[in-house]
Amino acid sequence: MVRSLKNPKKAKTNNKKGEGSSDSVPSLAAKVWQPGIDELEEGEELQCDPSAYNSLHAFHIGWPCMSFDVVRDSLGLVRTEFPHTVYCVAGTQAEKSSWNSIGIFKLSNISGKRRDLVPSDENSDMDSESSDSDEEQVEAVIQLRKVSHEGCVNRIRAMAQNPNIVASWADTGHVQVWDFSSHLNALAESESHGESHGASAVSNQSPLVKFDGHKDEGYAIDWSPLEPGRLLSGDCKNCIYLWEPTSGTWNIDANPFIGHTASVEDLQWSPIDPFRFASCSVDGTIALWDIRERNSPSSNIKTHKADVNVISWNKLASNMLASGSDDGSFCVHDIRFVKEGRDTTVELVAYFEYHKHPITSIEWSPPHAASREASSIVAVSSSDNQLTIWDLSLERDEEEEAEFKAKMKEQVNAPTDLPPQLLFVHQGQKDLKELHWHPQIPGMVISTAADGFNILMPSNIENVLPA
Image 1 (tube, rainbow, N blue to C red):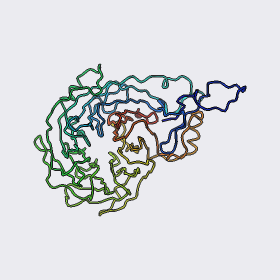
Image 2: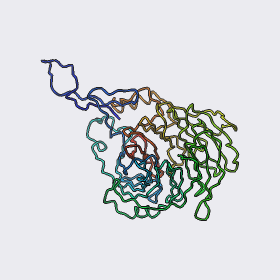
Image 3: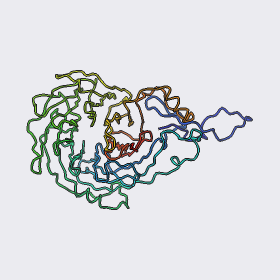
Image 4: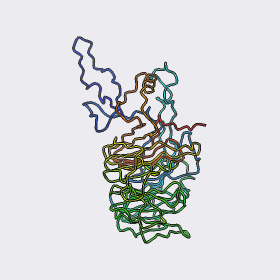
């Protein structure tokens, strides 16, 4: 976001009569807006800077959605050419319990453009006409199908190996597993001519499984990336249940994992070990588990001073576990150095207090088939209405910064006190809840908030992988 004059004619000037006064006011350079630090002056408003994005689209499916997931498709493992098409599932937070549904949708014709990170011609004028500044975004097309869902959807996840299989956590205390293959097939076969924002009819469909063994509602749920169909669900009563697939259904162990002293907020399977998983809790700890040892977690990591809301396990650097807290901090742990026992401490790889409100989502950028290097990029969303993207491999280089600013012809008007690892700040959504990187489109982030969804591709994150 940048700040600019909403009505330049109403802005105050120091011109006096007889000194060339006029109704017009010289244009002011846009400034980066810092929430919680800057204040809007009279006549100013916040505006999105389109040059900061390779692609930016907003849409909604009716009622707000607290949670969604990207559905893997067969359109290509690494897609870099516009226009893009994405498939997602999302659960609503409707005004009445009976009005809720799961939306299965296809968003196509997602337009965008590519830019050089810095101008190739040092003599070019930043204000001159260019291919990346005047090209207008084409409206994306959304096609939506809805399935009735009892109660609000707290969390929803699609299985990576069989994307038509989806698990949902309801505020009624039920965890349900669905087969949405007919809806996804219908969307795949449909032509993207029309547009539907939420007026689609709601169909009734029975879930494959409806589990009522939890004693309270919950938010934590995760499919195993290594064992198809293996599922974990955790509730606000500190219980974690293991689901094992068997003969077209699931066997849910009646004896839960109990190691936290408060609500289990998030769960993550290990990306390399089919028996290990991590959990985080309102009790301020992260627990590491082995499903073959049910008595207690092997370790309880105590890092944050408040509730731990979310965690994310790096898919390639499997020793790196990121976490976000209710106090606005987020950090990265190297679990190779975690000792066994309760409330153990571990040296942090990174710790940031940039956000001042609760962290609502955190996720490492996924590895892509064309690039097997471990990702150092992580995206974070917060209740301060910011989505931030960080590259933890970066360090401040004053000489490089000066060179970059010279190439940009003094147009870099960013604050000087920001962490060097902070790559991008996205604003404009209210009450951000969850974000996901698209696993098949490098550089694409999708986020949901109280006022709908955004799809964004920052221009300073390369969306074209090296050969």
